[in-house]
Length: 371
Image (tube, rainbow, N blue to C red; front, side, top):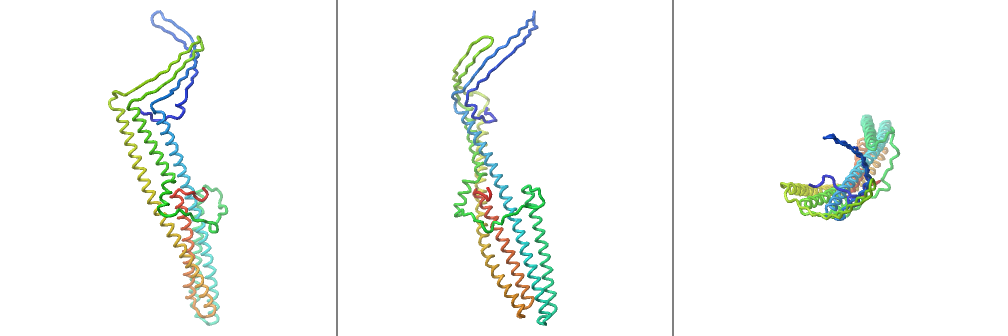
């Protein structure tokens, strides 16, 4: 029956075992007798060759160990990505606070300009109500944005185990960020299948199971071994015993146990193959989804940047027109709403792109930022 625990490479080396025995023996049958003796000896044994069982066990153990290492690497990469994502969420929330603060400043400028126009009689007094409402709404948006910062920072501290009340200074990647280039979708899929640690771990477990099948087949069939044994007696008398033993074994009858063990090993191999194929299929779908999302986020980022530039020009023109009496507060309000929307869309698109780019690194097995 195959061993449940794979053997290590130490099974290929000789074993040397010193042994000391002290025996105090008493026999109470009949007239009874007693004896005391001790002996000291050193024995060694070495399996010089075998039918391949040790190699199969060692290979299975090695592949299982490598699968564990790949699993640990996959877990580490997931942690790095989660930290990266939450890090970017903190930066996103802080940028949205800046948008809210700018909205407050512009609303205040608009309110002051409206009051001036009312004093000059260039606009009706009711326009002040609109400007004051815009200013109050901007204040509400600012409070919500600051609350989002507090929540995102708390989540990041919990994720990284930060014990202090405030986070350290966070570097903004905007100025030095370089997006990953994985080539075409087919190239991205090929890279992912070849480099993802979760797929590599599944492949190693599949290889380990293959050696498990070979081991079971060996034990169910003809097996042989060549062993060298040597014993050196030291006390009470010197002597030695040496033997070179070649053995050939075959399980002629075991009620079908060995054949059933082989079947179980093959079923396990089939299950590992199906699991590996499913993992590869899931990985391909994931890579394709993230690849498309990252490209769409890049297009959305370019579009939002263009919209932001246009909204800024539009708001500047509307504000100047109001000061000159050529535009009403409603024109400025509409321009401000457009600008705030454009600023918010730009911030959202920017950090969505950063996150999707980091996720593309994750699913294609490319190095993550900070890895």
